[in-house]
Image 1 (cartoon, rainbow, N blue to C red):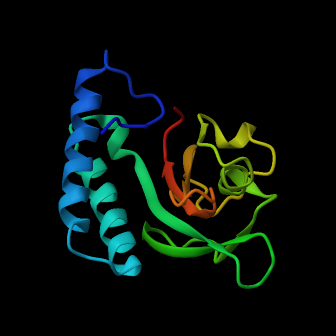
Image 2 (cartoon, rainbow, N blue to C red; image 1 turned 180 degrees about the vertical axis):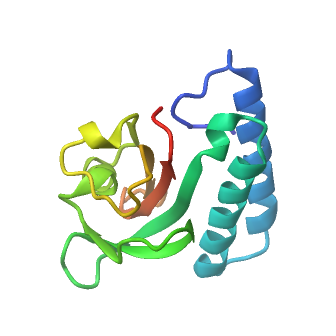
Amino acid sequence: MPLLVPGLSSNDSPKAEFYEEVVAQAAALLQDERNWVTNLANVSALLYHSFHESPDPKHKAVNWVGFYLANDKSGAETLTLGPFQGKIACNSIDFNRGVCGAAATQKSAQLVPNVHAFDGHITCDPNSQSELAIPLISKDGTSKLLGVLDVDCAEKE
């Protein structure tokens, strides 16, 4: 299975190995579990602690990993806080605000090397300097937005 991680290339072997190991661990965690809360909680913990246990100093600067879930019941285009690791976060995010909102609206990954230069950035933790938001899209042919995986870092990219 190819890895679709922004900034990851076949020429970047240590980085590729790190993400391949994380993907393998996540697959093992998810293998027999169908409860989405359990799965998102375990994946956010796996990612957060994998970054902190990595020898790469940039990985250690990750200060928040979690999920925002598409809230389609209200009719509003909002993301609602899901399982995460890190400091307290915003309860909900409108699609027209912040890095997560951009990922949701555009249905594409948003890699922001300097959040202070991103128009409409939402500051939950003033220590966050860069952010990666990856939309979670249904594979059932509808391309429905399920949520966003959000990773914040205390260093600029």
